[in-house]
Image 1 (tube, rainbow, N blue to C red):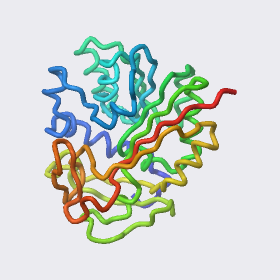
Image 2: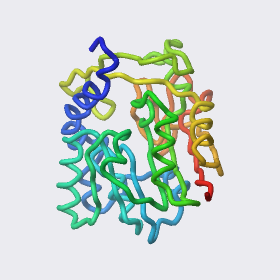
Image 3: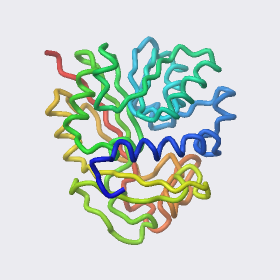
Length: 268
């Protein structure tokens, strides 16, 4: 894929190809989930707080595990993702669980064409904004779907991680958004041995870009926290530090791995 303007179709193809692998992987533990386990982790639950009776919009939801976990905590949920394979899986999963969750298949930037209501909480997490070229447009979407005084809950891998090469041997990319990064990957983060080869286009987004985009669109930052571990074993060269806590073997304890942000939409 040589034309970054094709990033949507390229990335959609990539996510469609890996959805089946992810659904059946040990990483996503579908067997445990169907028995009632939550897919949300300690960081998520801490930042989200009480969801009982809340109306939640989940952006870039993949095949809906986290969306349905939010519903299990008492929320009314809507999940969106641009992968039709993922949304088909999400709908099938919701039906099998007797869920009332609603799922919409569309590109995030096109969401206003498909949805008009506002929500108590907008939520998105782990490996989401890197697929988007324009964070100001992203923040505008987030803000437009929040009720006045509604909360935005955002948990993401720290931008310093994306500066490193795949083996974390050296700095290979800019911290700042210098344009599209075009790569080819064999296997996926959920199954390194999977027989899939995927082209993708991504963008690095530093914290300043994240904060500025949200503040410029009426979302005030209420809390921000960095973590020196990842709750997921999803990068190469990772070691387990504690239960459900992982770090890069050569860099453990030296880098922030994840950050969690909570913001609130200003009243008009």
